[in-house]
Length: 315
Image (cartoon, rainbow, N blue to C red):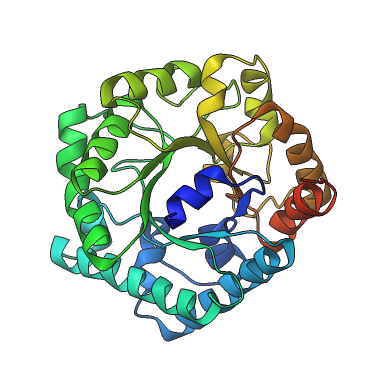
């Protein structure tokens, strides 16, 4: 079986990392415009820090006897961001390719200890992930995201994940772009404190709409950049669409997106509570395949999740 097939059939959820950007910028003191960690690919200090960062999660995967989904630091790599980052589209795409090379190099060092490591090309919104001011059509989104997705495919990723998706049309466009490159794709929606997407759509409506428009194109869906309290009641309904959710990457903080955007200090929440909340969420999601974290989380939070799901649960 392929690595993707192994992931989809696993009974022990794979791990992924935490809030890489908040870790880099708030905890490690690195700086980059527009929260764009991709611009640090040519910073030797940042590369060294990221090696240590990912190693801490890979150790957890080894101890938990499970696999790891290795996200490239390319969330701000859509060519629409090039002008705001002060570079050309070609330069930004080159950094996406370099980020894949960096991830592949780390995988080669770890694969004897963690055999199942998927290199995941992370794709972010073309606009603001918290407050989308202009929503593209599916066709526009496909055109905007295709250059980066094509670059990631050519560089050797195993899959594509659209992280912090705020609206249905952009998710459809990214799904179609990945399909054209022959890559498995995952769509990860973010929700506000009321469980709705920033666009106002219900989570279930969004998942159903993307499936209908793409012939169930995504391998699975995720929820990210929201505290478990913000979406637990939504998935607790047990509706059919909840079976399509295969991953969770939650925030440490209960703050709203607006509050997080304005915060000058990192809200790290409570790692132990974070782990317990995921233990309570897991039974609601029969096809949960990947767990990690998002804003404000690091190895402590993901370690608590792994302890609850891998060391307290018998598979």
